[in-house]
Image (tube, rainbow, N blue to C red; front, side, top):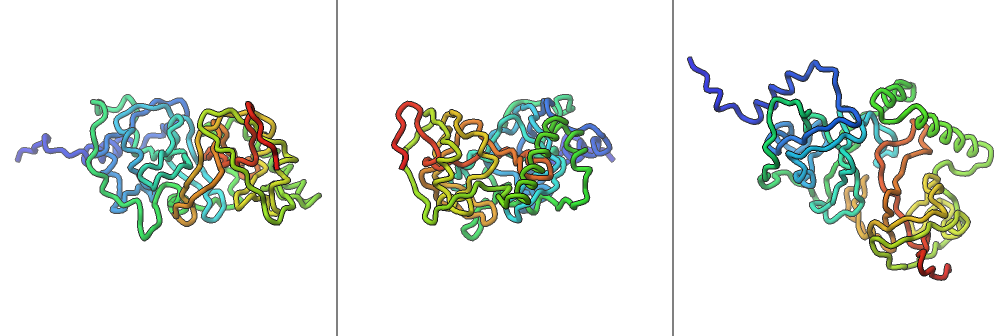
Length: 328
């Protein structure tokens, strides 16, 4: 009986390639150049809900299929907002500065980093040759259900597992995967311990900067992308916060303090975003994202968070460098 190998499907080719690599110890580390698999190969890894190991492949990721990128960070753990903890994640990397544009998710403007499962990537020495990007067919999976959006952020609790308190190997995993250098990890841990010690001695929160306002004020600057702004001083910002460290529901965290007094460019207005715990698209007012200003999770005893989410800034916490509006 003859076997017609010309009928080999993309799914079968991917299965064979993954099987060949199943016993390899090599993993994609920072600096590795990889290629995003073509859509038909990626689709072969997805279940009926469009997920692999419960992590969705989103329509915003289709544009990167068939293209080459450099791994910027390998993830062994990540924070999530549903339960507010640090969770174990496996075989996942970030590619350069690829962030979600939110176009398929109601125009969400959070700009989250995209999680890439290694099964969706291949090394450049792969036997399958690249022939450039192929246009994908209509994305067959739903990104909204009963008024709630489904994205990688909303599904992180399912795509990750708890990290036991006694698991000290997580620090070794961070170093082995080059998520952090030894000096970076030590600096983050020392700062987190300092915040806990200060909390014990003074009662100050180790997460938020607390104010005294009952009704917090608002200010509209109508900032636009590219404008140069200065983050106000800690004293000025504290005067806009309530006792939970929030201004109209948005928290100012201790991780944002190092940016006080410094100048940055506005990346964009934050007018709407998906709430991670609920999946609902909510509106935001007088809030912006600043270029390159991201959260490192330095208050987290687990050793920070590599997720690199943008900080959100109320306009009342900022001032134009060229023309400074009167502070109320």
